[in-house]
Amino acid sequence: MATGRTHRPATRSRGIPEATVARLPLYLRALTALSERSVPTVSSEELAAAAGVNSAKLRKDFSYLGSYGTRGVGYDVEYLVYQISRELGLTQDWPVAIVGIGNLGAALANYGGFASRGFRVAALIDADPAMAGTPVAGIAVQHTDDLDRIISDNGVSIGVITTPPGAAQQVCDRLVAAGVTSILNFAPTVLSVPEGVDVRKVDLSIELQILAFHEQRKAGEEAAADGRPVPDEDEEAAPPMRATPTGRKGPDGDMPAVMPA
Image (cartoon, rainbow, N blue to C red; front, side, top):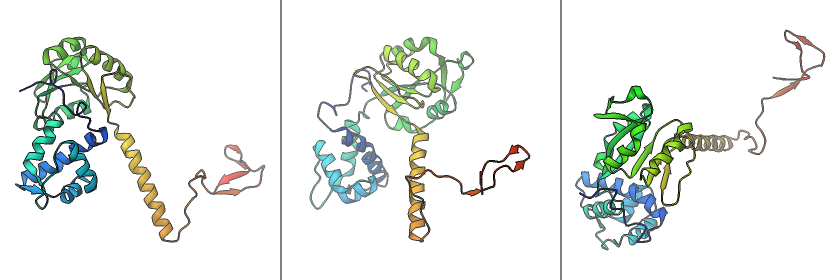
């Protein structure tokens, strides 16, 4: 089996747009579920609904792969699973190193879904000397002092950073210097990398904030539908105020002229 250090996916050379590449894993997940149910073929409408996109966009995406389906029959599920897996590089072996073995790093190391998708956790690395030699998910944690050797010995081209934000850039620099060309960053900070190095950022707090925005918007729409007043989004939210005579004394001294109701 080929390793990630010597073979790269062909998506860029074939001119597949980044937006299409970002949707390929969604199609693959839906197709894998169909395959597990022994479904032989699927229409573009059914697959698009399962992946959460519209069918026209799906057909356009698949045209970049050279797969157009058969009119009246649809797409061959097993063939598409193979075709998309090949385009994503999942038919190869991708050794991965996780740096920062705290709660999140340990959870990722124990995640069983990596191996089934072509990713092998080859090394766990941490800066805490007390962690060295500790087994996590059956792999002994190694110290960051040996990072260069670890990356080289295991042929790692994908690094996962789960360190505190203050250490992330230094770890990133060391991974890049050691030959890592793709980084998945869980640290809540923006990493600076040279040209030719790909970084994908996962920030759970940002995703939660986006969900909070949508929850707030839905609450406003429900209030409007019920005839309740909806605060102007351009006005700064503030508690109701009531006037109070000046000069009154309270336990902490003079009360302000305006106090919260």
